[in-house]
Structure formats: structure tokens, C-alpha cells
Length: 308
Image 1 (spheres, rainbow, N blue to C red):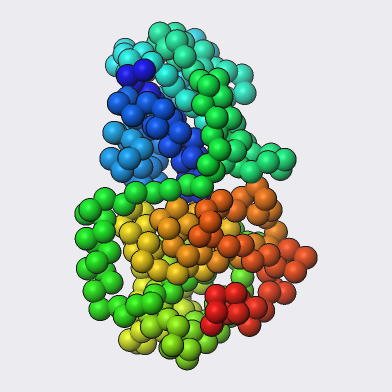
Image 2 (tube, helix red, strand yellow):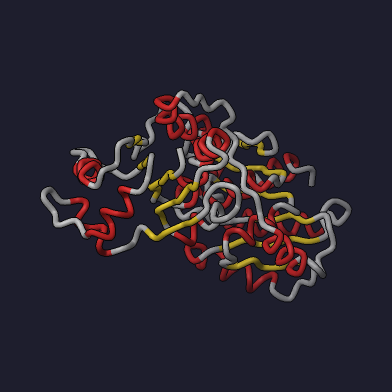
């Protein structure tokens, strides 16, 4: 098998939960050219970093005709898709319209991954099941990322004036119901700064969706010399920074990234099920809120769990 295409949209966590399947595919076909059709800012963690030789954007207008019956399929896309020996697609395609159009391009082997995750098994296991058709049984469900030398050089410069040990905190998740109250994050940070024997630097990690939470945090800590802010860093570079840290976060894509980078992680779970969604890395520990209610998880419990 010389050419493989993986089509994977979704958010960061969805993509990272697919990495165990991609790693098994790469291990089984180390010489194959693997391309990913997805969101480049997310799939960048895999681009020329072990998993993929090329990442292309799924947000390409000409692709829309592949979701219509009898669509006029552009010749350049026919040639592109037809050049692959295997296509693994996680797109939602209940009527197999997209798949049938791929077959019109001459694609012989198409595997369909689950577009949605059920509650009966871990998400990474479900996402890896299509590979069984190739005789590949995925047993290691821990996602791993492999920062490049350039990523690690960025992290070295970013952390140059940060005294270790480093504690990285991510107060967001993209879903309010999965968030520990921001007041608790602020108290946790203050407690950590007072317990200098354990962590000497705090890094607040944030993205575009975390602006509301981070406005208060910045106002309180922006002049604190032991505090840094990692705001909207490119994901491969953020992975290299988190690799050097101890991390606390919610059920979020960034928490999966920290675990995949090898950070010692404490992940706070509330309404969602860790048996389905928690990272499977041995360096990641789950702290489950009482009755699934994160407002009932106190700061002392989190601090004790991370040895503050």
C-alpha cells in the first residue's frame, strides 16, 4: 500500500482521539505516503510529525459536489482521490453519497469510521475499529504527538525565563457545562504561587473560545512575574510547551494534547464520561467531580491531587 488518505474533521479532541488509529496505520505501513484531509490548524499536530506527509484543507468549495448525488465531480479531484490505495473517512455520510462518489473516482478500498461516538466504549477504541478490516487490531489507545525540533526550539525560547517546575492551567473547554468555576481556577493559581516549593511558574493556556474566562485571569495575574500566558499558540508549539509542564484542565482538546505530549496531567471531569472521553495515557489522571457536578469540586481537593 503506497498512498493512504485519512479524512478527519471535527474539533481538536476528536482529532487527537483518532491518533491511536493513525499510529497503528502508520506502523503497519511505514513507507506509505499518508495524507490527511481535515482542518489544517488542528491536523498540524500530525503534519510532518510522524503521522502525515501532507495535510490538506477540508474546507475546499469544490468538495461540496461530492456530497450530492449525480454531482459534476471536478476532474482534478477525481484524479486526486483516485490516486489513493486506501481512504479512511470519518465524515458523516449516512446515505453513502460521499463514499459512492469516491468509488466513481476509482477508489477501490474505503473504510468508514464512526462519525459519532456512542457511550458503550472508549472513543479512541471506536475510532480505531475500521482498521480491523485491514487486520490491524489497535490495543494502545493512548494518543501521542511528536513535536518537531522547531517546535521544541520555540518551547525553549518561550520558557527561557520560566523557572521550573512549571504548572500549566487551562480554565476553558469550549463548553460551559464542562468547566470548573473560574473563581476556583483563580484560587488554585494563588495557592500554587504561595506554595513555591512545588511549582515556580504558572502558565495559563487559552484559545479563542476562552476569552471570557481569561479576561478576569489576566486582570489579576498579568503583572505577576511567575505567571505567563500561552494564548492561541499553534498547536504543535503548544504541545512542545506542555511537554515541559504539569497540566490541569477539563475534558477538552487541550487536555488531550497535553496528555499526548507527555505532560503529567490532572483532568477534571464533570458531566461527561471519562470511560468514553478521558485520555488513556498513563501520565493522565482523572479527577471526577461529585455527582458529575464541577461546582461541587473544591479547590483543596484539586490542590491535593496535584500535591499543592
